Image (tube, rainbow, N blue to C red; front, side, top):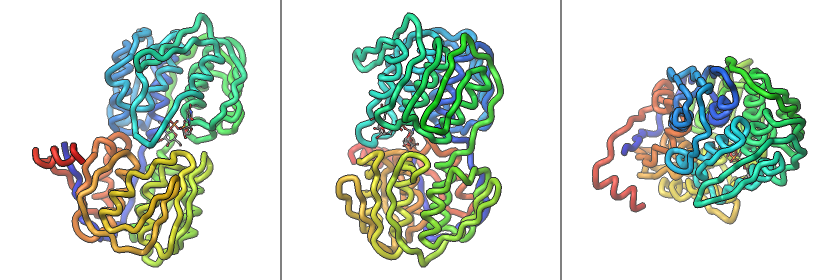
Length: 428
Ligand code: EPU
């Protein structure tokens, strides 16, 4: 076990290159199961969630090669092996194995997924979709069993706008017989990315990125090359970090349109942002106005940026109200920020942030991925040294975070935890 040490208060400057999108990668990799010949995906981030998914594809007979950048999956010898336990429980996105294996083999057994603890995260809409396509779905001892004699296209209205359900139904439907229509679909860029890969594989999909997606099933899909989109959440994290602790940071390899809501909020605070074709230049400041944020489905303010943004608000003038309408319990970072002297109150789905305060370095623990990003940003802003544990969460989703930060001038490094510290972390 390791901890991250951050010496705060050093103004950051330079250029940082954004990696491929984690939330695309974790869907694109399972999508390769649907092809009959090898698929290569360029720009895959080297993060632990990707490693686990690669291992899972190997468990079912795939041949996976990953050079830290491009991943090639040969799915030709894959079998419908049940995956009720083990690595499948390590990440939430293993639920995409359900849609992909159902699509290819007409059956799948997948242990109920793990991932970040953000309060209840049901998958009822995924199951509703699979059932509408003709699958029988049962939950036995913590694993979902799916079986269909034949998958038939259907009209599916999602009661909740869900990224995961939209993608999972798309995966199952591309090889179903006839037309599937997903209504009230999620519109996130990652959904378009998965649809682009599937289309290159030979699928017939229209409307990805809108709230109605039409899929005409095909008998088989073939291999192809696909280049992943940049990670808008990593980019947003660096934009917030630049506003919080940066002088002038160039964020390279971004699609600025994917970042409009966070850009608008930062500008409202008084942060200077220059937008180029595939770069954003963010100049941090010390006299920032506070703002209220409310997380919404895309293109609204992303819930994944709510936690990092809370850290930034601690240095803004006034009282900012942060409401998470997607995950009402995504506030585990707040207690840790309070240890660092933040003045924040949580009431239901809302955090009330009073600023400005001078954050102080402290020992804090990341309880989930974006809480980890929030604490790293707070550590970069704080006086003194901050020690962050729970790094397994950060490593799930941010590629090479310390090196990228060191490239901007940050003093940040890892150390092994002593046995006594391990005990303290486990008991906290
Ligand atoms: N929901 C249901 N039923 C379902 C599915 C979702 O009620 O069947 C609810 C959820 O509880 C939540 C809302 O619908 O309140 C939205 O959930 P969604 O299904 O869109 O979330 P997800 O697909 O499980 C993805 C990202 C999350 C991100 C959310 C929201 C992946 C692997 N995960 O999760 O990313 O927060 O969309 O945008 O794509 C992260 O990157 O840190 C992360 C947690």
